[in-house]
Image 1 (cartoon, rainbow, N blue to C red):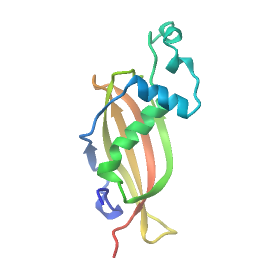
Image 2 (image 1 turned 120 degrees about the vertical axis):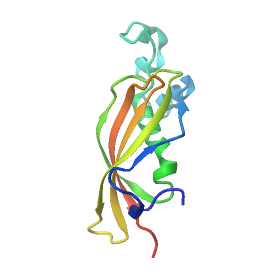
Image 3 (image 1 turned 60 degrees about the horizontal axis):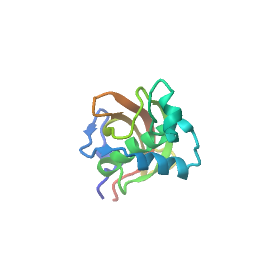
Length: 150
């Protein structure tokens, strides 16, 4: 497995993920279409031009998914059993078409599962930045993780 087992995580660990991603107009349009989100701020250039941003914004839920997704290969690929929750989600700066997102993940908390002896709970802090080092997404995510097989 490429992901880490519960026992391999340590509070304070930090991952500066090498994978980065430039967000395209097509990413934004397809995501809005797949989620039935007709918000003109994401889809209508003329509408968006009249806003304080002067251009279309990338759907923030796409940004959230991208930030978490970038972390998977180095943290949870094949070792997670699911997300238990997400809190403290914020978007300090918008993402625009052509922005490149990079991600830092930190381990905030670990605890044994009370009901599942072969599993543990890991609290991840994911922070996404654009190419100007502006924070574009922050989320605290709790995941149910496999323990190393006996």
